[in-house]
Length: 337
Image 1 (tube, rainbow, N blue to C red):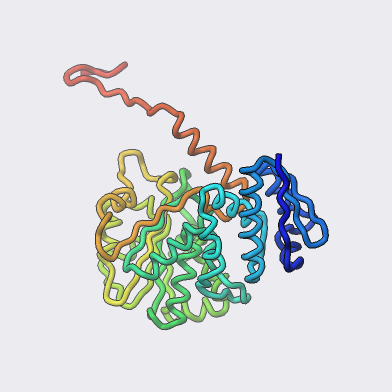
Image 2: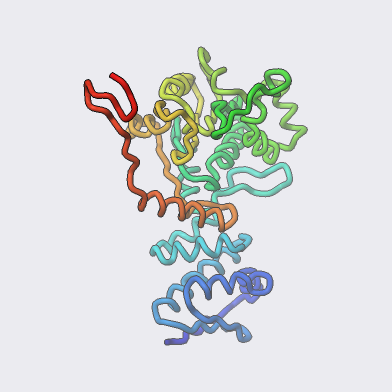
């Protein structure tokens, strides 16, 4: 057991780092197995030598973020701890940079993890970007933010959002209403992100002018999209033919972002996911980036991160399912020749 004393220059940053009722402090103590006390302008960290060193680096990183005006919450604290344990504390400063755009309510949108920053940088520097990762990693939200930023800066003339109309394991039957009413439930996540970025009034104005288009993937066939920012969401549910069709819609001055989660494919078992095939086919192609986000990039409730990690562990331990294949000329169980 050792004790380390940290001298604090600005106590207001400590208050921000500790959080209300020291809730962030409790996370650091629990995750790293140390004890932290605050005395005047000093912090005392007690515990095993390695754990104390990690805690000191984590607190230093959080203080640097607080000094730059970054809000500190439990998600920040847990992510910073993971970065320190992975030896990436030198990259903590990157989290305070790179505002993509500002929402209708004045809130800046920026990457919250190193993986998200890599994803956003790839979108800015490539014609086509594939963002693959589990739920909650900000794939769609950040892509929409980049689209809005490009539109506001007049780098593109139009935003096109699309996704395949595939039910998530349920048969919804015939939906009432006109075509727009039928496809709205499938496109709701895209609407939500646009409403937050632009506000409902501005969104409706751009929609009426044709500057924003939200449509099912089937409506992309036969078109050439010039000077557009195109987002294909839930791409794991595209067939190989649909994916090739979408990729060949790109025109001059356009950018495309394809997002999906290959662990949540809702296609029939006999169909190959167009996203999985595209990841193999397009690897190494100039102008195309493939970004893989992980559970560490989840920015939803901490329980979502734990659920994803639990499913990943279960998938690794579970033996592959063996499919019965009858030999040629012989019937399967209960079958006939």
